[in-house]
Amino acid sequence: TSAALPELVRAAITYFYEPFLEAFDPELRKELGVWYTPREVIEYQVARIDHLLRNELGVRRGLADENVVVLDPCCGTGAYLLEVIRVVAGQLRAEGEEGTMGAHVLDAVCRRVIGFEILTAPFVIAQLQLWLMLTSLGVPPEKGQRPAVFLTNALTGWQGPEQIKLNFPELTAEHDAAQRVKREARIIVVLGNPPYNRFAGVPVHEEADLADHYKGIKRDSKGKQIGKSELFTRWGVRKHLLDDLYVRFFRLAERQIGEKAEYGVVSFISNSSFLTGRSHPLMRESLLSNFH
Image (tube, rainbow, N blue to C red; front, side):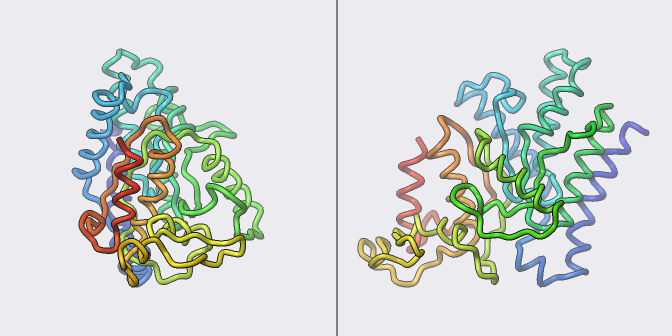
């Protein structure tokens, strides 16, 4: 049916993107950790978050609550964001809000269901899928409105000066919009399937510093390490495995939810090495102290 067409288009876009990248640039796909997340897993994560918000954190309407801000820091083609919106729409239908559902969903997509993506192709696909979904509901964004999906590195720009120079006006505007979200949004949920493995590229200073917290490293104003790491002085660990990307994403989520927010939920698919790894005692301590 014509009503089902947007859903079929979105499913096809998501399904074919990973095989395309595998054929186009397999090394880039592996290096950046671009892996298709099964829809069943996404549905479970989002449903579980909605359940926890309602039953553990006192948010009666769950993800449909207008004060719940959701971030997927590496949103890819937007699968998690679309599932969040599907759950929001389901709640509105259950409340008998069919007539105003489109306007509520448009507000959620443009304001509080946020995605960051570092690669241009999946960023464009995520925007396209959200536009298709909104169009199917009869509320395509008007001039000046846009889905809250931004082309940006999620691991930088939350505090301090950025180290990036942009020469294109369009990218500058995109960068500035992402910065406003990073510094102003009151995030309640961080979810997704971040890349796990170490990235071959040299990270900018702030991104590298995300792992410093779990290494117990202090730096001077020039970024030079001061003395020995706490990981070595307390635990005798010289060589560590804390440069995997998933560790940085956990630190980002911990900082936004465990340290800054009054309450919230983090839901990642991740490497499990931090649970028992010899390199991770400070990470375990920090997570246990910052999350009730």
